[in-house]
Image (cartoon, rainbow, N blue to C red; front, side):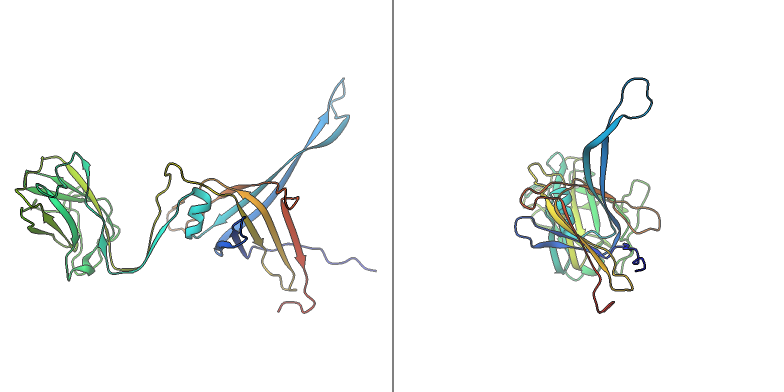
Length: 299
């Protein structure tokens, strides 16, 4: 009888992450640069005397590691790697965050400062994604700075920096009391003055964020105290070969920590994650490896 063809693994198809308690999936990673399951063992060598060689060797520890190279960032990856729970919005007409004081407390003030910031009706198309800083120039005027220019070309009116300080107001904006409205030109937002006489302290600052009309938004606060990073299970599937053969690896108990956000010039981001494969007492192992070559071949 001739030798059979070698059993080989080719490529990667997907990685599915699932809850250990229910078995239900968190989700799937389809755009992956690779995945490896490394079971690396060490031998305990008996040395002694004048011999430079080992007299005996016995099994030591085996370290189980899973390496993942995802090229996508779904919500569940933030949860299982960082303990963060993303908040999703869909079909949003455009919005701003609340104006929040940064330096001291006179700028955002319902009575004597800026009561709020919001979208100017009819100017939603000019909303430009990013974070903005408002600084009091005098008791009644402010300048605004943009912390990114990535979305300046959105809308009818292009945004621009006035100088190297990243200021976007050519002249200070005057904030009027008793609920007066002041537009931030070209950016689709307006400031509402306090209910009383405006009297801000020069140099005080506040911040807000702008989101243009969108079909999808995600916010994830990373590093909150008390956040929980769960253990999870993982199904790693190799690419189906031309003869129809397939590999599936069920990793029962996986622990990972950390998620790199790599941004290189003119390249898609690819994270490199190393997770530990832990022993599962209930299943008496760490991985179940399955191989099949269907009789019907590559269906």
